[in-house]
Amino acid sequence: MIRDRLVYIKRDDLLRLPGSIGGISGNKARKMYGIAILDDVEFPDCLVSHGGPQSNAMLSLAAIAAARNGRGDSKYPDVATPTDKGESDFPLPSAETERTSRFFYYTKRLPRYLRNQPSGNLLRATALGMELMELSPSEYSGIFGSQDGTSGRPPSCLVCPAPHRTLWVPQGGACSAALPGAIRLAVEVATFWDAESSGGNVDKMSELAVVVPSGTGTTALFLHRALQMNVTREAMGLTVEEFTKVESRIKIVAAPCVGDADYLRRQMSRLDIEAGTGNGTNIPEVLVPYPRFTKGSGDSIGEKRRSGYFAFGDPHPALLQTWKELQDEHDIFVDLLYGAPVWNNMFGHWINSMRNIGSKNKMLSPIDGRRVMYLHTGGLEGLSSQLTRYIHKGLLEKNTVQK
Image (tube, rainbow, N blue to C red; front, side, top):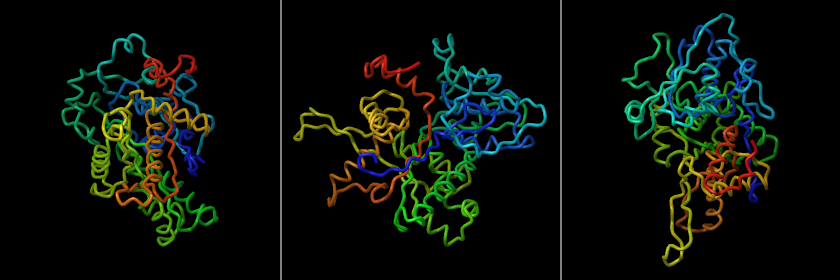
């Protein structure tokens, strides 16, 4: 129970691709599953992607390419990001022939401190053979930037760095390659909810809202779409009528963490079209944050309305408070970039739902009247560096972070 509400936690933070694919866990294990399971005939000679120099997706792609080249955790022990325990039911092909797969990664010119002393995911990815392609900020924005984020298609002005079979992977893995992992997730969620209903743990008409921390909205979109696919129904062994009774009671809710609700909707709509899963109109609902309040604005109620969004990556006392509450009171460990903002968002909806009972002006919430499942997408490997930023901002004592 969290704040007197029963919340299901889908522990994808414990999920990882087994074997020598070190560095791929949580949400990235879902997204990269479709690439990792390609056999040797289908697997590209060259992977190309772009993003920040400490990206989890970057490290995941580097690990996949390294595994195909026979360079795994045993040779690079610092690359692994082990979890306490994990599911090992993601079957992966084993390379039987010697080959070389290259991984090129475009990013903005590295800051001096990171160039002089590489650390974190950058250090791990380069140790695995990633070839870094640095661009000036203006060059990077000119090639990859847009108001809606990056496209699932490779930029027309980008020249492939290697003349071989190439697979373009957009920033964060926002492409159709993420669909196979989402289908597996849909089967797991629907199977769970079907069992809860048929087992009498919940009313057979009870509805479930699955809250998904979202940057590009890839996982939320494809999970939403997968719940409407025959392949998911067939994997569950249900008839059309049986499956409809289950999936119609499950709603996927995307919680924005990087941009605002409109940005997230545009991202999901475009990905839906580019991936060929739809026409961009059938997308998940978005958990729009309620505005926060601060004292002393000078208005009649002594409060100032503020946007409910947090600037991505910027330390904020409210996020730290939420993070501490989950850890200290509920033994739930989340990151500060995605996990804490989403929980803060959900808390806002719960509070306002109680305040506005019977109100005609109540903002409709996609999680009202439903059981809630939180998809724990992982990201804990970067928590130490996130907490360090809070220390530098003076929001946290120095002895809080353990090296």
